[in-house]
Amino acid sequence: MTHVFARSSVAHPPVASHGEGAYLYDTNGKAYLDGSGGAAVSCLGHSDAHVRAAIHAQLDKLAFAHTGFFTSDPAENLADRLIAHAPEGLDRVYFVSGGSEAVEAALKLARQYYLEIGQPQRARIIARRQSYHGNTLGALATGGNAWRRAQFSPLLMEVSHVAPCYAYRDQGAEETTADYCDRLIAELEAEIAKHGAETILAFVAEPVVGATLGAVPPVANYFKRIREICTRHGILLILDEVMCGMGRTGTLFACTQDGVAPDIVTIAKGLGAGYQPVGAMLCTKTIHDAIANGSGFFQHGHTYIGHPVATAAAGAVLDRLINDKLVDGVTAKGDTLRSLLTEKFKDHPNVGDIRGRGLFLGLELVRDRKTKAPMDPALKIDAQIKKAAFAQGLICYPGGGTIDGKQGNHILLAPPFILTDDQAQELTDKLFRAFSDVG
Ligand code: PLP
Image (cartoon, rainbow, N blue to C red; front, side, top):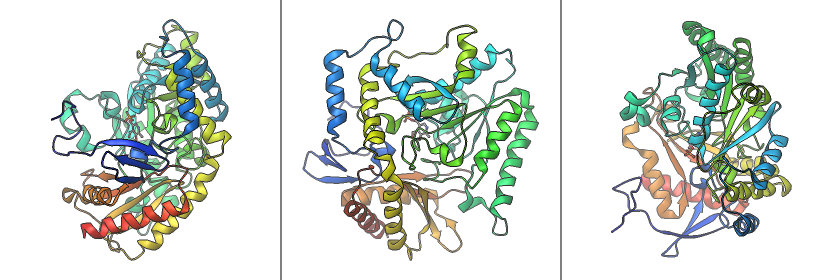
C-alpha cells in the first residue's frame, strides 16, 4: 500500500536504497549500473563526496533565503562561474528548480524582452517536431512530441513546428548533407515568411536532441545557418541544453561544438547532477539590460529560485566537472563506449544507427537495418528493452512514439562521466543481453 502518486499506476518499481559511483542499489541489495543517469541527470554518479560535503556545509550555514529579500553567496558564485564558461555574449543567469521551469522562464523572458523594446507584435515561437522541452504548459506547447501533447492540446499556445535535423531518417538517399541542410533551412525560412518575421519571438531547439530522438546531433553548419537567420530577422535563438548540456557531449555547453552562441540557453539535469533539483537560464546582456533599463522587473519568479543549497550543490558539481577535469574525459569515454556498442551490435538486425556525442548516445531500433523501416511504436520495443535491461541490472532510457508517423523507437544512454572501461563493457554486454531477451 502506498500513498505516493506514482508516474505509472501499473508499474511497481523497486525501492531505491542507496547509490555508489556508477551504481544504484535497491532494498533487496540488487545493483543497477546507471547507464542513462536516470534521464541524463547523474553525470557524477551517485555518491560524490565533494558535492555531499558542499551540501552539508551550506545547510549548516543557510538553507533558504527568499530572493525577494536576499541574494546568496552560492548563487552569486555559481552565476559568475557559469558565465565564465558560457558561450560568448551570455552574461546573466536566472536560477530555477529544473528543466521545464528553465524553458518557461526562457519563453517569458523572450516575450518580455520584445515588449520592453517596443515590439509587442512578436509573439510566435518556432520550434521543431520531434522535440521535448518539458511538461509544463509553455514548454509542452513548444515541444513537438504528439503523444505528450495530445490530451492537453486545448490548453497549449499555438507554436509553429518545423522539421528537426534528423539525417539518419530524413536525409534523402540521393541528397548530399549540404542539400539536406539547405532543405531544413528553406523550411524554416518559409515558416518565418508565412507569418512575417516581425511576428516571431524565438526559435527553440535542442543542440543534440535527447528524449524524443535519442541523442541526434545536427549536420554540419545547421546551427550556424539557424543563428544567421535568427540574427537577420531579429528572432531570439533559444537553445535547450537541459539534457545535452553540462559536459554531457564533451564540452560544458553542447552548442560550442556547433560554433554558435544563443541569445538564451537553458540547463538543468547535469547542473545539479541529481544531488539537488536545480536549473538555470542564461541570457545575453542585451536582453537583461532591456529589462533592467525598462520596467526593471522580470515578471516571473518561483519561490525556490536561486536556492542556496541547490546552487551550492551545483557549484560543487562544477568543481568536479571543470577543476577535476571530468568534462575533459567525456569525449574519450564516449568514444570507448560507442566503439564497444558498435562492435557488439554490428550485425544486430534491429539496431539501425548508433549515434550521439560524448557520453550521450542513442541506438535507433528498426525493423530492418537495411531499409531503415521503423519499429512499430505500438509494440513499445524500447519499453520492453528497458524492462529486460533493468532485470539484468542496467538502467537505460527508452524513447519513441508516434511522432509524424515516422519515428520508431530508440534507447538513450547517458552514463556518468566516471564510467570505467570495465563498466562500459558491462553496459554493452547487459544491453545486448536485454535485446536478446526481448527477441
Ligand atoms: N528540456 C529538455 C531538452 C529535456 O530533455 C527535459 C527533460 O527531459 C526538459 C526540458 C524538462 O526538464 P525537467 O524534467 O527537469 O522539467
